[in-house]
Structure formats: C-alpha cells, structure tokens
Image (tube, rainbow over all chains, first blue to last red; front, side):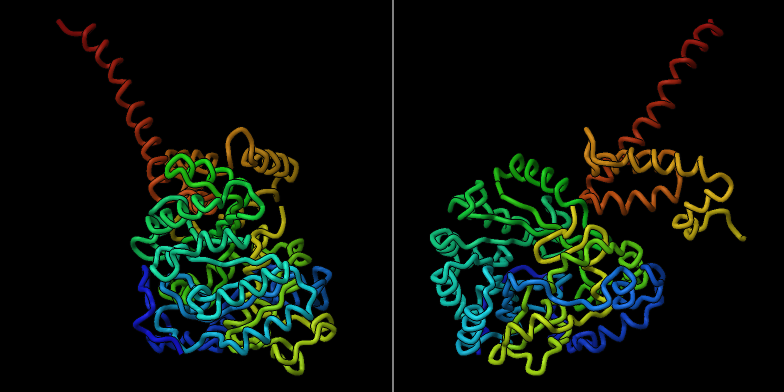
Length: 364
Length: 110
C-alpha cells in the first residue's frame, strides 16, 4: 500500500472513473455499451471482430513469437488524463505490483525468451519496486522501455531518472499528444505541455534523443478527439522540425496510436454523443493488412496482481488470457504459443487505418 | 427530402460512378494522387483543402477536411489561421475590385 500523501500531484484533465464510482468504471459496462452500438463497415458488416478477421484470412487469432513482456506496474499516476484507458490517477493507491509479483515477472521473463521488457502503468516510476525491476532486466541484457508521462520526471523523488536511465540504456517512451500546447493541455491537464517540454529538455541533456541507440527517446501521440491518428512518418518529420525550432528539443522516433473506445476515452465519447460515430469510423477504416502485426501476437501483458492478458487493453477490460491458469506463477511458453487471443469490439482500434499498437502504426 | 444537404451523402460519394464508371475512376484516382505526400506534406495539403472548402462553402468538404486536418496533426489554431487566409483572399479579392470602381468614378465624375 502506497501512502497517499507521498504521491506527487501532477496535472489533471478529469478525475478517475473509479474515484467517482461511475458505472463505466466497470469493464463489463464498457463492453456492454460497445456491443449495443449499431455499426456498419468492416468486411462482414457485422461489427463482430472475430468474423471480420476470419473473413480476412484469420479464422483463429494466434500468437506468432513472444518478443515483448509488457508489465503494468499499477494504476497509480500523478496525472489524470482525459483519454486514459487504464483509469489511472493519484487515487489508485491499492492496485500496485508487490515485490513477490515483480520477482515472478522476472522468472517469466527468464523462461519466455523475450528480449524486450515494456514497463507501463499508471506512472510505472511510482511503483516502489520500479528501479529494482529495471536493474534486474538491464543485468539480463534486455531492452527495457519505460512508458513515461514526462511530468513525473520533474518531481523531487524522480528527478534523478533521466541520468539514471541513461546510465542503464533504458529507452524512454513518452506521451505527448501534440507538439503544440493547445491539444496537449486539453487531453492531459493545464500545465502539462510546459512541464513536458521541460522534461524533454532534461532527457536531451542526459544524452537522449540524439540518435544514440543507448539513449533512445521515443514520443507517443494519441489523437486529442474522435478521429484516427495520422501518418506516422509524415508526422515525425514535422514534429522533429517543430520541437527543434520552438524549444530546441530533439527526439528519435514518433509513434502514432489510435484511442481505443474504453474507460475514460469511452466516457468522453458518451458525454459528447460520439460513441457510434467513432466506432463506425474504426470499422470503416478496418485494414486487414494490420492483423499479422497486431501486438497481441508478440506480447504478453501482465497486470499489477500478476494475471496474464493478450494486451494492456484486454487487461483493463479484465479479459484474462484464455489459458487454464492465467497467472505469472503458472506461465508456460508452450501454452502461450498455442492459445487463442481474446477479442471484442475495442480491438477495431488496433486494425483501423495504418493500425495501432504500443509500437505505433503497424503498416507503412 | 426537406433540405438539399445530407451528411449521409459524404460516405456515398463513390456512388457517383453509377452514371459513368470510367470518369469516376479517373477522378478518384487523380484525387487520391493529389493528396499523397509530395513536395507538400499531407498535413499542408489538408490545410489548403480546408481553406478552399470554406471558400467554396461546401459542407461535405468542411466536414471531411476538418477531420483530415486533425488526423494529419493540425490543431485548432493552425486550422483557424488557414481559414483566415481564405477569408483574407476572399475579402481582398472584393476590395481590390474597388480600384475598378475608383477608376470608373474618376472617369464619370468631375
């Protein structure tokens, strides 16, 4: 249990669904709401993801090769962003990974053959075992990614992290919705943009974002609204020029992600009466060439309490992996390799347009 | 039909091929090429399209290119500036014709 008073208070655009005891805090309500929407589009015009991928040549969605272990260290965050699919926030003090589960994750990593460990949250840095887990992964020679909200790097307890990461070659993957202030603060809370730029400048000072493969700085952008993300390489060129010109900030790579219609983003769609419009937009942009590269085919997702999922979105929707014992204690690579991936309507977010994954766009 | 413009027309644009498939195919192939990344970026082209859409006051185009601009990474401030560029040209076009008026007035009056 983390003491509430010790949590740095960062920018907020809303409060958590959980804090407000909103009906949409319950995953079953989110799934029900999506299932009730009238949809058109997609290969079968049925709004059933499993039928649309089946008619695209994928009667069974199975894993390819386990490359990434994505660990969600907890729902605790110093920020409360409008679109958060985790419903994270400063009030989520209960759901955070303990040391035993961290050690069980390390044991899964050792057995899995995966070369990349992707740490997410909440703000993963707020977990008391974060630095221990990073150290252990670095000692194993693995590629370690920290999914960072940037503002956490300005807090007293975490201001050493840019240099600490640099010494260990940790790849920093940062959320920034736009290279200009307007969209960024609307999605993530007033003051976020200025803090984010300051944090990026600190990362640059620590050697990040200058093309060094051991100091890799990646930015991640989600659309600030009910539309799909743009062309990743085209945006990267513009972002690099704009951030360099306006702030002297440099980074290595931009990832464009679609918002999946769930949790707080779904709440916003409901409030603005755009659920049907957005879901139909995703279906109409269904792109079968994204299926082979879906992240659920190369990623194992682990929750704060050690349960196994096909991705972080399924994790937040409490759709546990369809294996007999979906827990880190019982992980078996052969069983993972042969299990069937669970899908529902939110999955249309990953197959829309150029596709979307934690690694950015799936196709060119 | 109680009014001329219907939102549902936009996704049905392709149905225009019913009357002449070949011309529609040519138009949509050309249209697609125009908006590809070129010397201008997709984002810059979408901003030009938005400005033109407002100038020709086509609700379909305004709908489509507002979304296209956002998807291509423009924000409200940038899009508003694009619309003001169209407004300035449109207003300027009206005003510069005032010089014709001026000459005419000078011809006709003492």
